[in-house]
Length: 250
Image 1 (cartoon, rainbow, N blue to C red):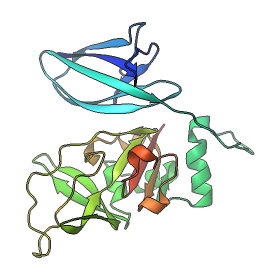
Image 2: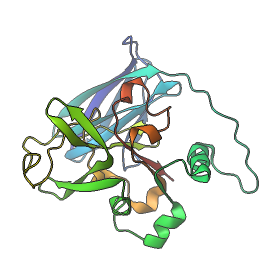
Image 3: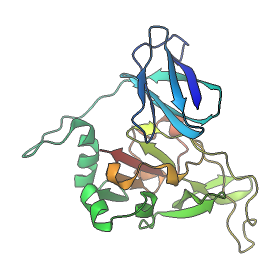
Image 4: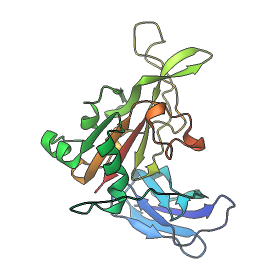
């Protein structure tokens, strides 16, 4: 068993008390003390995604490899000011945190969207299988364990080497996910008839097999290109995203 020991601060490195630290896909959740520190013990060895969030600050995630020892991690959260539009609800009430998703669903703002009902109809074994139904992205296999990355089919990344496809970012419940390291060697160079050269995106590459299971999903949104990404997600820190997958959990 391993342990994660860490600290949550603001961008001025001042400790943040009362920040919530959780592990994606589990019920593990701790709160930082007055010194901003937290400790999660008795974790099975393996890779986990740790999320730190506090009201009034931009949440952050980090990929941590738990070993039979203590892994140390730190988060520096940036303060944000959020202005929300007035939401009027008629009939059965919707949880407030889903209002944003429901509003965009009504206005058909996303390139593609799946509701809880859509997911139940398809009844996929894994959540990433729902994304295989979206033409705005391509699923690219990677790794020896059957991982999947999402590549935009509507946006390209332009560099001195030319235009190449780029990876889509992933957000879960408002938290931008950390990614895997980029591929070291592409299968074939661009223009050779093989797989395209894939560039590393600003957020890294998130393995879609790490998404929460279908029974935990309330909704899925796919924004196929930069122009369709909601402005509150595509701010200065994420300005180079070529596409975005947004997951809402129940």
